[in-house]
Image 1 (spheres, rainbow, N blue to C red):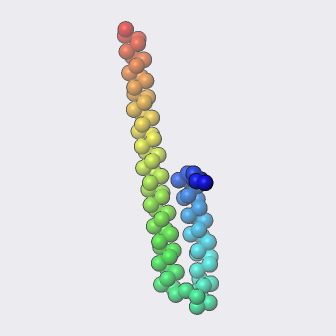
Image 2 (cartoon, rainbow, N blue to C red; image 1 turned 60 degrees about the vertical axis):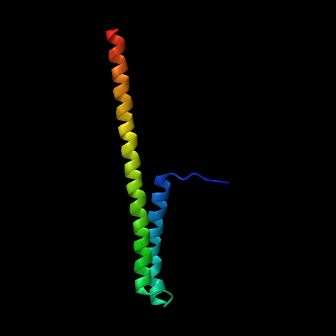
Image 3 (cartoon, rainbow, N blue to C red; image 1 turned 90 degrees about the vertical axis):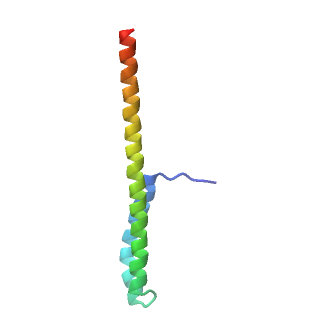
Length: 85
């Protein structure tokens, strides 16, 4: 079964994960289960995922906005055409 998660849902999930890792990783480093370098790399990877999703979301919203503008222009054009006819 396939679930559909919105970009917004995915971004919120990544934000939670980043905050969780900021909390957990220092403890793992102190416990010797992870090096500081590994912690930094993993956190930076999650931040990159966040940035990618955020960028995709912004482009998606911009595309939707622009499509809406084009549709509104078509509607205005149709109204003008029907008034003139």
